[in-house]
Image: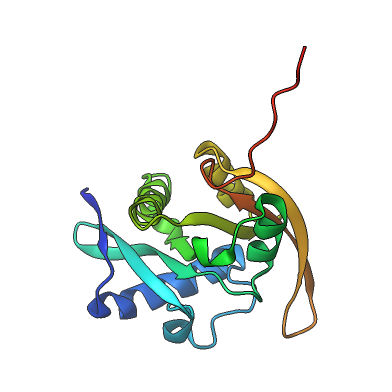
Length: 179
């Protein structure tokens, strides 16, 4: 079994949409559902997207989008760092087909996200639903730092608690206690 991560191609979208439906059935992610999975795969203000493939077949993806003033994660990050949100990117639409988990695809996708942000001098912050324990473990394994909590209210009225994370190089600097 060969795992590869590369920039996402338009031809990947149908297989990724099918994988997304499986993810939603398994994890209830995305919370809003997958009425139009092809549209959901590409967020507004997209900077880049990557596909994870096993033996040449798309099994997951990650995207990186420019932050906007309406992004909860961007507001929390800006409050904690004092930096301009024009310097921030938001990873989004990260998922891996449940049949192909535990092969490090999510980790490899996030490495691509981090490399792109670093190469373009962008900080990274994002939010994750507290119910998504596996995603939180992955982010914390990468050294991401929780910088706040928020509550998302979805279009169908459901409120969902979430944590806001920043990558280690994007997190607010903490002062070392003096002895």
